[in-house]
Each structure stands twice: as structure tokens, then as C-alpha cells.
Image (cartoon, rainbow, N blue to C red; front, top):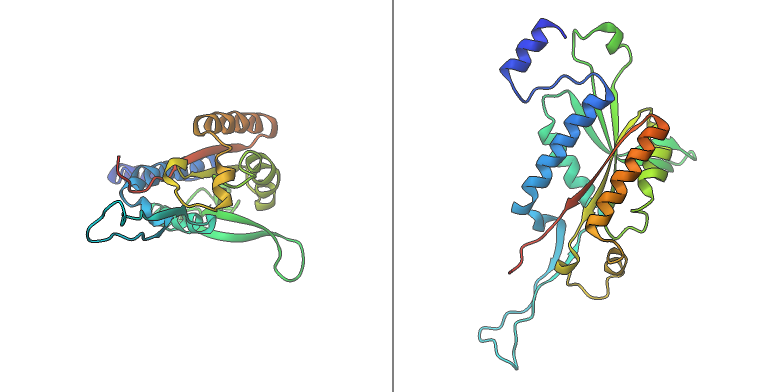
Length: 234
């Protein structure tokens, strides 16, 4: 590391040197953990709410009808994470892009697209041997807890396809967990699917799966299950 890099790091504790995919993985994971900690203060942004009816004088004949809550689509969660990561990674020479086509399958734009592709560019004056290798990349795959591919997509999509297609060995697998007890919409088939998973079991299973993938394929995969509550009365 150059002397001027050390000086910059000492002047700004938030500044990080990103030269490898694991450097980028550490930085992005830290940013996502910050996002997760901040979510409870504004988590209703990631839920759809249909207001209920609140009569002026509730009674047995005229009760209060509660609001109806259901999770927003996966695309909304991806958009939110893109925005939050862009804010938190500003100054690191990092870009965060959504729905990046990494493997075209026909001339009309179809193919494999990453939910998020994070790229860190070498700083001016970096070691030319490092800079010549171009950007450092990280793929992020995002699933809602209702997605039937939650148990398998970390291995089959992220590790099996998206990492080699994007030309990187680092990825983060995110599951947005919407607590079932706060999901009071009826007739939503996603809720039925989400009930098949248990939060603690899912975390353990994904961690074990990531460890096996990393050992078998010389890749770096880290799962995160992000809890997405909403305002409610105890």
C-alpha cells in the first residue's frame, strides 16, 4: 500500500482500499448490515398497505377494519438495496447496477441478468499490475421469502451461473424475510409458499450451503437473511 493511501485511510476511517473481490465482499457486506440495522425505522416502505376503515365510533356492529399488509415485489426490494448501497458506497469508486445482462441468449435482449452487479474501479495511481486487471466485481442475488427457489438459487443461480458469467468469484445471496405473523393479506399465494420456511433453519441451511460451495469451487459466497418487519401493535 502506498504512503498516500495510508494517510487517506487514517484521515477517514470509512475509507477502504478495494483491490480484490474479497475486499469488495467485505465492504458490501458491512454496508448491507448497516442497511439491515436501519430498516426498522422505515420498513413500511417495503410493504404494500391497503388502508382499512376506521369508523368514528367503533362498536360490535361497526368495528374497526384493520389495514391490509402484504410485501412489495422482489423488484422493489432490489431497487431499495441498490439505492442504499449507492449512498453508502459513495467515495469508494464503486458502482451499483440493477438487472445487468451478463449472458445474452438471443439478439433481442433475453438472457441471464444479475439482480445487482457491484463494481469497484482501481484508484488512479494504483499498482499498474493490479489496475491492468480492470474492475473488481461482486454479484448480488435477491429473493423474497415466498420465492420457491430460495433454498436452491444460491447454488444453482448465483454460484452455478451468475458468478462465472460475470467473471467474478464473489457473491452475496440475500433473502428478504417478511414475518408471516405481520402478513395479514388473504388470498395471496406468496404467503402460502413463505410459510414453508423457518427463519432460523433457513439461515443455518444457507450458511452451510455457502461453506460447501466455497470449499468445492474456490468461490466466495455469503448469504444474508434480512428481516423486513412493519409497524404493528404489540
